Length: 448
Ligand code: PMP
Image (cartoon, rainbow, N blue to C red; front, side, top):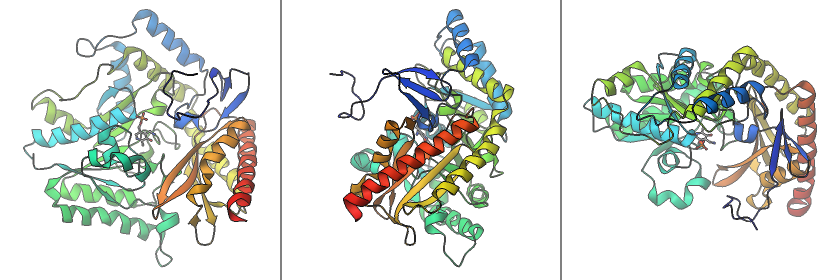
């Protein structure tokens, strides 16, 4: 009997004992192709020599020094590197241990910024439905995933949620995708006017939605309009790139694609590539200076901030991106992955949409391709798919969004950037076999 409080209390999990490139190996020697990088984490695979070497060196020299007493050379080097690569004037990096912590820090910094500026009446956040920003209470409050929020709703700060940019479901036949993007972006302006624009701190969104809607990039022009609206009303724009950032979509920061800059950006996952737990919040000169020349103290912190070993790991990850030219590779190989998925699944009766950017691809499953009606919740299609794929030696990340009050079934693919072409073929073969297996099962049990 396990004494570990596993999240899936009643599920017996295999024990992972070794990593080998894009594969994880369990205690019985079975190999699993990691097609989702865990949850879009393991961008360098599981045995990167350069990162392991950097970690060993750091631990031998110094594992940890509390950030209230010391900075470290690796923290300084990582801060310099990240901010020099970031778009706009994101000149400061605040290091934490994961994505939710980065989002909490972002929300609190945004609030403190306005307090420092003498605008304490700004107290509200606006976010989007079909979004996920983390499981801590602040991050959960801005998130718009019904399933994750439901039982904690009474504990969450009150946040307004506007529509996501979800062209597959919401674009009308009489509008172009650009027009659709402008229409949904304008919901932000309407919400600001309803709230009173000078009561709002920030709007937070994922440039490419991840853990709630099976990968959902916005249409072109949407984020430009969002930026314009934020600027018009002096509201901060926080972009949550915890999942879609760090090269995952083919640019180091996902919002480079949209041609906009943000006031605060959160990153995690790929930043440590799974070798260490790490997250970061990047912010602008303007926001940093407001705190630095105001109280001079950001009222927020954690014990493991800027952990020396995590810093060394991330620095090695960014070096690997550069030395192995991985981010550009993700762009071109990602297109091939998507093309291959589309080719193999184009006629599948339960596949509604295949979408994504780079090595961040999602499949949305439906009961009926014409009406786009979701599969009934009771089919648990996404959970069955995870199980079937694991049996076939493939890790893929299932998820349930909420579509018109019903669970949507999606699967997310976020393979390591080093995925070779033969590994890509194996991924697609195993995924299609698993989808076919589960589809037959679900059809016979629920729909025949
Ligand atoms: N933001 C986004 C966009 C995420 O996808 C996630 C994790 N899936 C988080 C925040 C929370 O990160 P963590 O699980 O590391 O706390």
